Length: 332
Image (cartoon, one colour):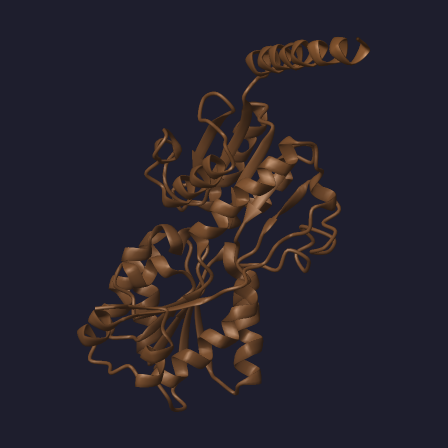
């Protein structure tokens, strides 16, 4: 008899729990996610299929985890338009909007962390070493309100220089384009040049208007190849960078795939869109109670060499067969 009562009670209990869970779902507020990128506009970050590729990849990651747009989360999106002077204002807007968590594209991380020590921040990418720049204490134990994923841009500059010298051997100088938000990677480039006994000629770019003159100056000074150490400005103006290098017939290697896709000679990097997709898992863990201070920062495990044969033909360069054979993608 007791067993019968128990069995009858089980469906009632399950039904009660289900009803309680349903009520909780109805009353729970959607997670408010701030999303800030170095490029694009605010409008580029909006909607179920944002125009900005990184925002689109992040939404894919959320949906893979079962999140529903407008039901389980809403996005407050901000795009910096490749203007570092705008990042602080946009970061403060997200803080004022009282979002629950902020996903910050690499070049914007410094502005966001200066705007809040309270709201969890998930960083994605960046041309800097987060430990060296004191953004976090260590990769395994960040220690503050910042966690996320790095691009290892600083670690890869030496490899990019080696690939570039395979294409353009000899003692001629290598030109380097860098900017304020990629200063960490530029310093690493200097050190890599010393180690490899390469002469580097550098030009800092502050805005889109300075890209073509910088390439022209490097060419005039004797550079026969180009390393592009990109941050927010160069990333947002990838097409201008590619055109400027092509105009001076400078074989160039870039720090992100987007440059090769827009006509650049070659890139060597992690997949940035994949990192933004993976950022959704960090947001999910934070939403479930995890604290950024104890969430280890993740690094890429795979790096892709992308070569553009059309770009090579346009500047009269023949890529070594060994380079083409190692490429993860060959653009014809």
